[in-house]
Length: 406
Image 1 (tube, one colour):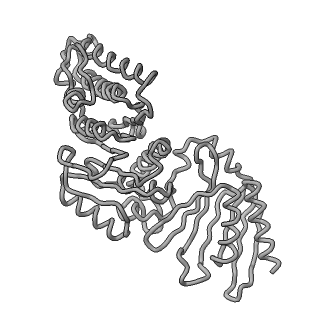
Image 2 (cartoon, one colour):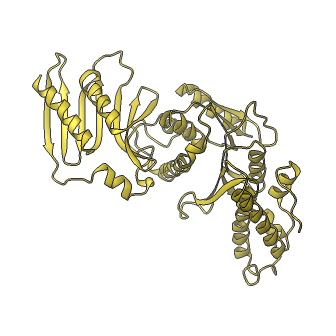
């Protein structure tokens, strides 16, 4: 078949030129086929572009990433044996192929009026927030179930900020995914998971995008929230994702925990979550603090005049100082820590995320960094004239930290 041969050549040429912008496969040739549709797009992984294949069933999505050479073989297979309709968009052309029930291939190629940038140039010249791991317009079942997307994959306007937040959070995990153990099932605990947008998102990233075996537990004190989340798990037939009624203090995992998540745990609840993560020796900690009142209650108006003379400024300073102390304390117990902007400040003032990654070695320079961080905590607290705060006390009590002399 001449048209099919031409289609194969076009697919191969665009793959080898790395000019593919998007491919959509639809209308399965067999009613028993595993997927109803496959979407393909370029994606940045470790500063290198790959093609991500998103395969859809009635209720789930599955992701697999290929380098360009591997992708060529899979694209040809899907175009010639799995689907009747193919729509390929490159940097210069739109190519459509349709197979009749008798197997005849109809091929149409249209040159774009305005050439678009190549995938490599666009992805590397834009930050990842413009190349979301989850895309608007592509059905993502857990987002449909949680009300972020319509059944057709369109993000609801009222949830656009939540959609950006979810993608931003996934970027934070993706950036440190290589630091996680590679030889076993990953264990993740989310304290105070609430409606669990990000718990579901974490499961989606690890299971479907990164193809990792994982077991995730979401904990929340509200039984109705837990029940709702478990219903979604059942409807989507998600494996190794459970929600339980519980809190930070009472949860005892059966196995090592690799990732601890704590989002908007109020005031010192964040400190209890951080201390528990340290006790478990978690590889990665992700925490978005909320309502940092403890330091503010100890901070005198005369601590740092004129900064602390005004109530609203003193409150904001106390919040920033609390999170700075938390990151330093995590550094003192062996973590490489960062304070990152979670989402833009116009969306919410609670926009800082603490990301901590356990250092592989606690010797040499790492020990010097830990000692320096602890000295900075002691010096800063002495300057403010405040006692040890909850996180430091908890770390000392559980033996994770030596008491500093101040």
